[in-house]
Figure 1 (cartoon, rainbow, N blue to C red):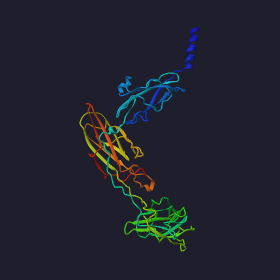
Figure 2 (cartoon, rainbow, N blue to C red):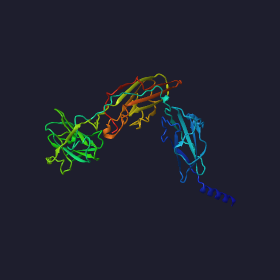
Figure 3 (cartoon, rainbow, N blue to C red):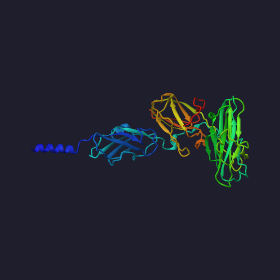
Figure 4 (cartoon, rainbow, N blue to C red):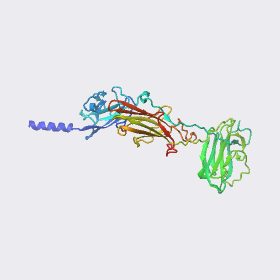
Length: 456
């Protein structure tokens, strides 16, 4: 009977405290799996607790970090042993061991205790490598590239106009004026390009027939419209401008320019001048070709664009820029133990080593506020590097570093022409090392297959 009662107690205990198999996996450093080039001095570590049973949670953990895989395997945590920490946290646990070194490789594992106080086995090892933690770690690397000339384009060969009353360039009543100009496109000529650009004080809006081209409420820059595909030879169009003036007693005007270029022969240039008709009242059908505008008056020409009080008016800028191709040949004369490369290609870049792309990144590095910071990436290139002659290649694109769409379109800021900063660190088996860096010895060309590029 006593033996039967003992068996019942054992069975009851087993039911109340079932055997739970707990494992720890999916180790991450800074939310990345075995990342290269971490440059925070307190990387954050994460993992996932897994169990075959429900209602299981972590109550404690222990992290070991070592400077070698062999050391970690033997339990020699020469960098950090967290000890048993009572916590259910398993996401973004800050590293709290000894100082980490630039380019250092670190190996780690973790185990957890569940709510039955059962410890898991140690996880499979994971690792991370450090990036370059100080400017001096880049060695003699320099920012290299090919600069060009920044050109600011202004609207020219046209005039400010307004309703012919008083001196609108000095003072005008608040209100809206409507301007129209009938334009016949010559027949038998092929249109190569057509641009209609304009602005106003306080705002100017443009039209082709009934089509609204949009407005600009900043008299310092134009509204730029490529209308090449909207026009056909031999047809007649009404070009309209609406000038909105908000405040009584301040200057008022609109300014614009229509430019149509043909594959042959002279262009058709229509500036804003006294040939435009204007009314201070909106009329039904004023944007139609058969509209009777005999009751409208000729616009008053206030003066050439660039006049006071408005000054220069910025026009659209041509910012097409071919990709930069950079190349560096070098030799690795000894047996290679380890090699890492860190580089920043602004705005976007791809790295090649011995003819093959390094990594799988695109649109890299990540966008940044470039007057505050630049991002870089790090790769382990030990396997791609070979003893003897080698060649590095980098393709530099514009991204948002070189804003090849004008500020008039999107308000993007241009930070300069594409640049490269690179440091390749090669460690040899005999204990010696060398660095290949970006400097004046690199070759560069813009005569490659990518003639224009941006992130649009």
